[in-house]
Amino acid sequence: MPGAAVGVFHDGQEHFFSHGVTSIENPLPVDENTLFLLGSVTKTFTATAIMRLVSDGRVSLDAPVRTCVPELKLLDDREFTVRQLLNHTSGLDWGTLVDTGEGDDALAGHVAEQTYEQAMASCCWSRSGWATGTSAGTR
Image 1: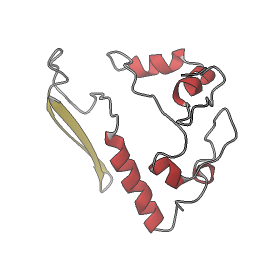
Image 2: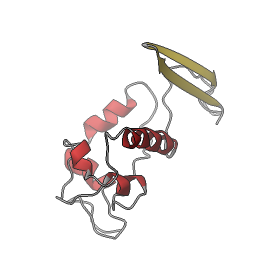
Image 3: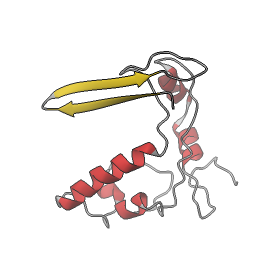
Image 4: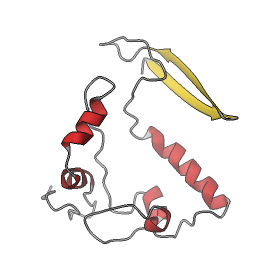
């Protein structure tokens, strides 16, 4: 990776640090507005935040996810726990690394083009081999 950006919120203030360029092919300077494909990098931060909430007694690893995120909508009614999300045994397969193009509005444009059903069908494929979305088909 030829560049990186970090944002830190501390004592009520945002601080941004950046270094390098966006890519070798398109070497624009990295700043606090540069978008990156995050992939698995977010897993460590998410797990750390969840485990801090567990330590504080605010989240139970064995609680259904809908207890913590009641607005979660899937095309089926199955339940899974926070623990299952963290250890990748919930049955969800989030194929979300999508190249949405360049520009500040690229992600918003991609999302606007997707119907709810398309978004769910593309990201909710069970590792056990059954589709949770109505149009996911079979793999």
